[in-house]
Image 1 (tube, rainbow, N blue to C red):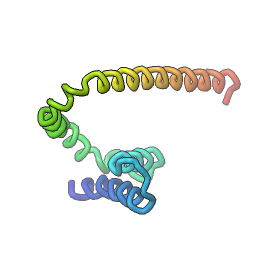
Image 2: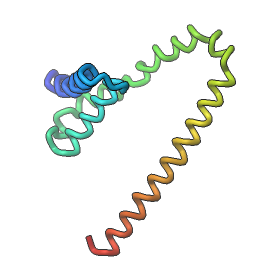
Image 3: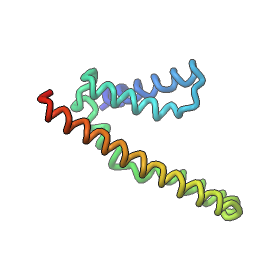
Image 4: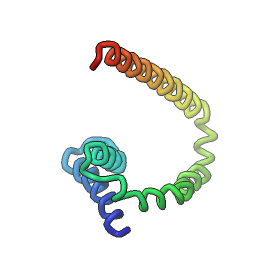
Length: 120
């Protein structure tokens, strides 16, 4: 399991390194997950190499939300003061994600249908 942790941490390290050297405003953990996905998709990593650690992390995933919940409780007063802006931003971003996801799904589905019609 130690090797599996190292493989996942290597992806996180790559994300941290890119953010540090380029200064882009993307969370390093997101870049690390993208690297992990890319490595799995391309075949650099095999699923079996990280299966155990992935299952362990998924098992304890709810615990990772505890700090966020505590943060919400700590800033409940500020949230109450700005509830309208928070609610508005949440609804707009929700609708935007919903529309873009639906549109992307339709485009990809239509591309798949075209490929099968043309025999590719």
